[in-house]
Amino acid sequence: MNSRASLKFGTRYVGSTSEVIVAMLTNKGVLPFTMASIGLSRTRAASFGQTNDCPPTLDVGASCTIGVTFRPLSATCRTANRRAPAFPGR
Image (cartoon, rainbow, N blue to C red; front, side, top):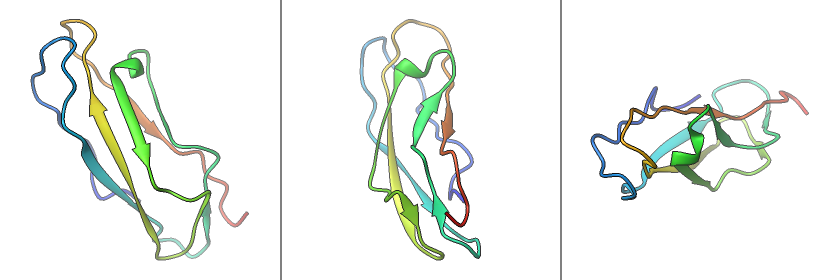
């Protein structure tokens, strides 16, 4: 459903916030895609921020955008997973 498999922020200084990287979520299914929420998960997800313009239900063929920023809180590698729990057809 996503136009990007991963988002790359490169090297960042501790405490500096990256530019927003935008990913598009498109419903290519045959039923409306209902999301409980969109968020980031993983043990270090606090280093990432996210905004989106996604409605609670994404109609077939419709798209929305998700913007993600990265602000490292310490000098180690950080990863997070995007999550959007789905309830197809609801």
